[in-house]
Structure formats: C-alpha cells, structure tokens
Image 1: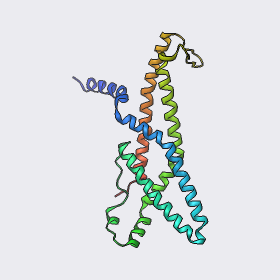
Image 2: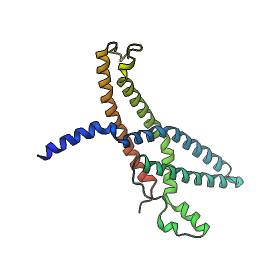
Image 3: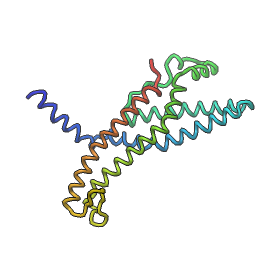
Image 4: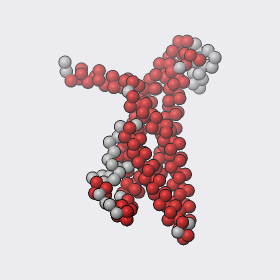
Length: 211
C-alpha cells in the first residue's frame, strides 16, 4: 500500500472527524467566553488605570495602581490556565526560576515589576476585548447558521428557512438544507480551531516567560 493510499483516508477522517474531537468543543468554548471576559478585563484596566493615575498626587493612586497590577497578574494567570486546559497550548510559567528564589519583599516587588509577563500579560488582557469580540461574533454567527440549516427538517413545515434565493418548504429541500448545514458545521469547526490556534500562539507569546 502506497503512502498516498495511507494518507488519503487519514485526511478524509481528519476533515470529517473534527466534529467528534473534544478539543474542537473546548476551542469553541474558549472563543465564546472571550467576549464577556474581554469586556470585563477592559473595564477593570480602563477604570483602574484612570483612577490610579488620577489620584497619584494624593498617594492613594499608588495603592490603586498596585491593585491593578496585582489583579492584572491574577487575571493573566487565569488566562494562562484557560489556554492550557481549553486550547491545549504549551504556555511557559509566568515567573522564571531565577525570580522565584528572591526572599525579601522588596526584591520580589522589583522582580515583579521587572518581569516582562507583568506587562505583556496586561497587553494580552487588553487585546482580549477587540479580538474576543471578533472571535465571539465569528463563532456565534457561523455556529448558529450551521445548526439552523442542519435542523431544517425538524421545523421547515412551521417556519420554512428563507435563504433569500431559496425558500425551503419541502422535505427533499429540507434534507438538502440539512446536508449543507452539516458541511457548514464541519467547515465552521475547522475555522474555529484555526482561530483557537492563533489564540494559543498569542498566549504562548504574552503569558509565558521565554527562557
């Protein structure tokens, strides 16, 4: 048996088997969560930095900024865990071993401020808002259309799908519509997996310390 004969069934199974892979649904869950989390992160950082810088002359601003930095670190750690468990991304630790050996409080504070992930993690949280909105829109729109087409045989009698150029009002048409929806769903899962792969790369770049 040649290599071509071996790889063709594998490619076929990989394409259509995407709907049976648990990772596909974990990726979709990550993309659906990106919108509400992105909005929450943006509000936290925008309000925190504005309030902290506005009150910095009263010294209270330093406390607010410290809270923002600490909160940003914790949220970045949460996002790192999401990338690891939902996306399957191999994200390095946020804190390098050389910094973990620091014992004094002041040394740890300086190491925290000098750690690039302290700042790149905040960049990731800010990017989560616009990129999260885009990911959410793509995920919801594509999944909704695909599922609606796939389930057409169940509701075409009461609410015929109107596809602008085609009104589905017979069973054969509904079955064709369902087949189209199944193919769209498979393509959608591949697209969402691709977007999730990009999120994984961004997580590795901004949420892990490069050794």
